Image 1 (cartoon, rainbow, N blue to C red):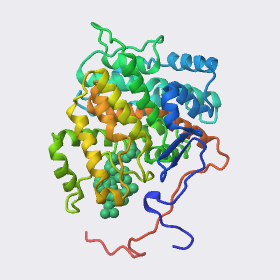
Image 2 (image 1 turned 60 degrees about the horizontal axis):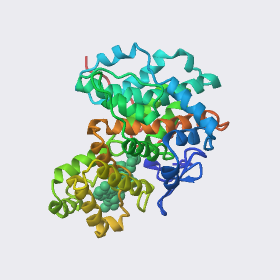
Image 3 (image 1 turned 45 degrees about the horizontal axis):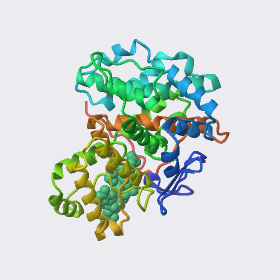
Image 4 (image 1 turned 180 degrees about the horizontal axis):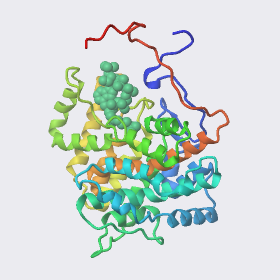
Length: 391
Ligand code: CMC
């Protein structure tokens, strides 16, 4: 291979330098711009987190007010986008719709496409951040045949999203602060996660000079896979299929069987070899939400706790360092909030958009940035001549 190194899955390849987020997989630690995720989840809201990821520091109150205001200003999407939605089947997966709609933003906003112009870059960042809740809510409303609900400027980002999801023209959504805070925390926990598959996709797409809307659309397409952002939907359906606490032991046993291709969804991680700190926070959030809704005896939560208990005592999982990841509890929380499982990955995409944008901006401004172009080890036919073709 000469001086090429072969590293399928990029197990040992750093593709870039980054100052945005940091994971210590052995300790189970995640930092955004140096701040531990546990502290951000308690002391900050998602808008603070977005400002931090994009600009490097937490906002002052004045900066935060201005940031909130700017994002709220761009929450409304181009009215023409409604027709774009209408071209889809109602039963299309909302992720399929999101990939297309976000890519299509580049056809709507010609004033945000020049990646060499800082004003264009800023506008694209604000539009993406502000549009995602509106677009995810529209993809949901479209799938259930309800009218789109327009955003409101006076509401906080996450409350606005919940109202666009659950409000209707005949009955406005009653905002519950505990539930808004829970979803806001889900957003914080998903906001960035260094060079995961979708972020790497965004960077790779962006390295060719592609416009930011196209890059984020590529990230959404990658996130959709069940080994990545699709895992929360898969984890919840796995928990549902187990059905009751007494069946957990048998199920966990079946997952260990090498003849069986099944995996314990929401378990394991390429980088964390200890409990994912986001999973611990998600478990707490799950408790809070179920308590608020009077669902303390939720059977799905009980099954999840039992899976965690059984797996963490089982040598198969212990020896492979397989612990719950962020997706294990997030499906239960989202489902308790009234979010249907086909929207879970859309929620992940919404929350991760800020991380993707921050990483894209960092890449664009890096003087060492070049087009991403991996090499390969060729294992095909050696040079040979085309044989005479039969007429
Ligand atoms: N259940 C059962 N066995 C597992 C699991 C699991 N969830 N995850 C890994 N293993 C086993 C795997 O079979 C292999 O065993 P062996 O060494 O005997 O062949 C060993 O553990 C190593 O697995 P791997 O596939 O080489 O590990 P990876 O780093 O390539 O994969 C992963 C990481 C997250 C894709 C994988 O753990 C997985 O498929 N988990 C389930 C899906 C999931 O929860 N994904 C969400 C990840 S976190 C959020 C996000 O990134 O979006």
